[in-house]
Amino acid sequence: MSDYFQRIRNQVMWDRLIAVVEEQARTLMRVAFSTVVREAGDLSAGVFDPQGRMLAQAVTGTPGHVNSMARSVKHFLAEIPAETMKPGDAFVTNDPWRGTGHLFDFTVVTPAFHDGKLVALFASTAHVADIGGNGPSPDSRDVFAEGLFIPIMPLCIAGEMNELLMKMLRANSREPDKLEGDIYALVASNEAGGQRLTSMMSEYGLATLDQLAEHILSSTDKSMREAIAALPKGTWTNSMRIDGFDEPVDFVATLTIDDENIFVDFTGTSPVSRKGINCPLCYADAYTTFGVKCIVAPRIAHNHAVLSRIHVTAPEGTIVNAPFPAPVTARAIIGQMLPEVTFGCFAQARADLAPAEGTAASWTLRFAGGVGMTGHRGGSTYQAQSFQSGGMGAHPNNDGLAATPFPSGVKAIAIEITEALTPLVVWRKELRADSGGAGFRRGGMGQVMEVGSRDESPFAVFARFERVENPARGRNGGKAGAAGTVALKTGKGLKAKATHVIPIGERLVVEMPGGGGYGDPMKRAPEAIAEDLRMGYVTREGAERDYGAVFAADGSLDVAATRANRAG
Image (tube, rainbow, N blue to C red; front, side):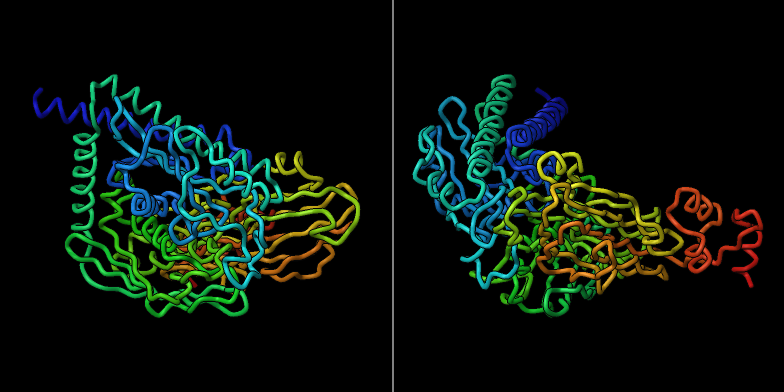
């Protein structure tokens, strides 16, 4: 076979391998018990060679899971060498430092065999329903209080589940059936990937994946080096402050680009917190790497070759490299901010590359009911989680996206799902006018949600919200997005990080932040402002205040007068 046709064949098989891992992820979504996995896609799936190098990842999933799982497989191999693995084996951990950052995330690694030979490893991660301890509360003093810690260990041995481990998991969970179902879903996901892989290898007459792996990694590495070579060379530093828990958190990132590699160092970042918002380095690495890739190589396939060109470091003891046994349950608050910090470095290197700051960390609504959570006897006992999002920052070429889950990528859980599984009612869910930062490109809008209960009982909300004291900043003259707010409908303000019990008859109102604007607002086209007004993205008052808009007697935007007002 000529080199030309071999390259075509390799590319076809590469595409097929991506389809294999996407089916792996979709299997996990179809059979998982947890709503956040089944409905929101809070998961990852991928295939690795026997050395632990990621060859392909599923499109479905989050960067925090995918990139930290890509490093995690090497930890599994260090504990359980590939040559000792047998058909029917599977291994598991939820170790935050050797997995994906907190105890709720279970990673399962399964060896795949073809004609009796180990040819690959499949790994998948899912956010399970409950793992005991203090669960989602960031008030634990260490990881031991946050839930059950499972080191890397066998989950299946020769096709038989580790029943002692499953009994221990069930005994330590408030929702044992859901937890057990999620564990089985992870096993089924990897098995589906393995079955599809062996079918593919038989179809193409492959005894191993060695040649295909070499093609995938060498091609990707060549593309990644070319992308890096096109960037300016040097070192740039950016800082960003967020609300934190008891006190603000300051991020400091230093970006260095050389001929073939990119380095991001977080020296100068705030120390670990007493609260469970700390971030293990694996998770900080995952989101920082994702931010770099968004700028440098958004269209290059994601695998080991990309990850090996991006190097993330932080001094131990900083909030982005929290040492064991620091509390880490809410590490997403920190980790999901890191692409924004990195973008600020790239904006100095090349102003046309980076957007303004956005909301970043998800505004996840975590609800609970029952006497254990509210102290109220009567009403339903439940826990529910609903991913929601504020606005993204504006890009040099486009307005920011509204209510978009960047960088996590998790889908918002439909309100009908929450209402079907709990007594909660979402009375209002709409975009928040004037929340996008003003600019030549407008920041993305946040949203407003109003939630109550229909069974005449109180309900608890675990508030862990960011961008309330420190909104997303604009860039190159753009204005900041609106800050978030948390309150009762009757007007009483609530803390953005606390557990609140919403009284009987009251409703919770959350106003999610907007993204920052990009460029001078006075240079935004009046026609664009008119469209924003028509769509309800901007109010008349906001247009007058932020864009110098002038209105005619009939209430319509006077384009000519607006231009004259700006010129004067």
